[in-house]
Length: 240
Ligand code: UDP
Image 1 (spheres, rainbow, N blue to C red):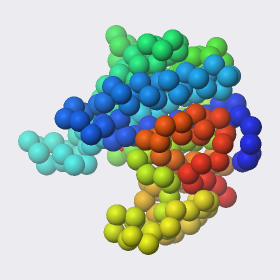
Image 2: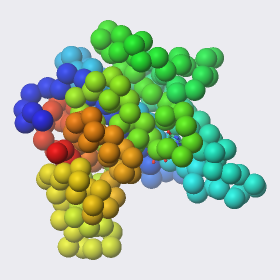
Image 3: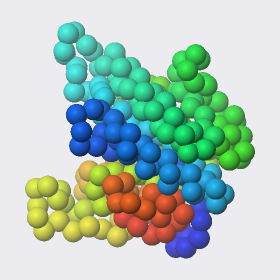
Image 4: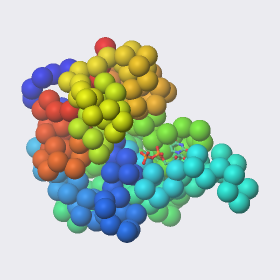
């Protein structure tokens, strides 16, 4: 991982929860606009940005299993559609600040977005368009973190930037332990072994196997997205 200097191509993962804000609505336009402005400034300096959005602000499959007869696969299909809602919202915010954007979905929704086509996604990035990947991996039982790791590997992104509501990875849960320490660096292995709650094991394993470093950082601090996108060291770095 380079300490300084711009990334060439990055995969930014924005969780649904991070888009929710504090209001009564499930998505906060102030947040999507803040993200859009930071992404805009960085794409103008030549960094290619692909985004995977979560859907937890609207619907998380696992929490609804059993309700009205929902099985996990059906619940997860609803969850994946929730990510598409975020993708379209974020696209509108990006376009309102002049960033050309394409949404590609993992399963076909041809009237609203392109289907995911790897080579086409790469072509969009090369032309300076931001590509937002919606509908996760397209498969139930997976998460959008895994989708982010998968797409990062597929498009040869140099890094996976995981935008969250916390400053990075802690050695224990900061909500339960007031003495929890923020880690500057942690290995994939430690994340898996210690069960550090940052990404699911499937996502971490994919990153490890494909040698994709992960930077976990706080989305809520102004300027942080630009810093992370431009290769500045913030938050926690996860690598070998
Ligand atoms: N989901 C899925 N397959 C995927 C990605 C997501 O089935 O490849 C579903 C799953 O139900 C999940 C929901 O979409 O709960 C929203 O995604 P996620 O929970 O990863 O969003 P985040 O936590 O990032 O907001």
